[in-house]
Image (cartoon, rainbow, N blue to C red):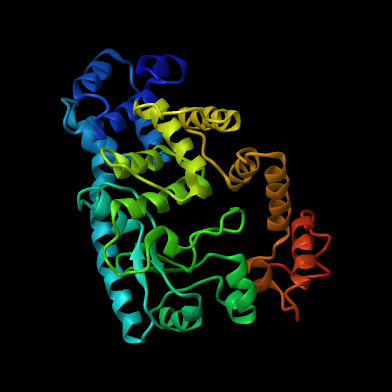
Length: 378
């Protein structure tokens, strides 16, 4: 899509953010950006808001900082990116420490995504990509031992009771367990320990070994490409510009290959990067459902529409290639909504996991409080 068309149809601010991403991945020249800025009426507060929603503030700042914009225009970007650099460094130190502490207890974990991904894909600059939690891979059999160590380190987790009481159901229904703690400076450290890459709603059976291999060598662009097609594509349906920039940074000037189960999601990403980031159009025809979904996601991206869990579930159903697959996705959605979670288990003691299905229904219907006599919910 042409930048002028995006600016006129949507807004100059989303056009500016997209153009910054294009300059960053070298599908547009910095002179194009300078011309657009010089001749456009741009609200820079809105540019910051849009860049925040798309999680590309470091990229936008890096590109705009090389133009002739007044320093005052970029002050919010500069302040955020400075804070991100400091926090990224703190996270790097804390990740290494936690990995060492767990290793001393013979609990092997491996860092991936987040910091490691940024170092591999963004030239080692850990301040160039927005991320929040620190992600580690762990074997499901090590979860209970890891929980004890993390609690001793001062981390808290709302899922501990679920894992303790119903470990088999937890491993079946979840894909990770999360811990949080405030740093001495008040910053929130978050760790996600993943024992598989796919969530409950995904009609996928891929594991870490198929995506990242079994050895302990540093992850490559090819391995991370497979993982991000699954994470950004099959799980989240490319929710923001950051997800598309990730895909381009991984695949640019490289020939990639993904498992057959991920090829439609890879093609979806190629359609989106072609339309939004001016990348080469993918070769060969695509099915009608895929193209319609690409159009819908493009609209969401251009209007900077935040995506909730509802939209992701809707996309799981809509993107299904056949009626049979759609029915299966709808059935999984019903099961997902009925599935008890840690909130249900933390709020009431019941002897069987199956009883929590009833408890969840009661909680969801407890809008007016008329069911408080049955269960007491906090």
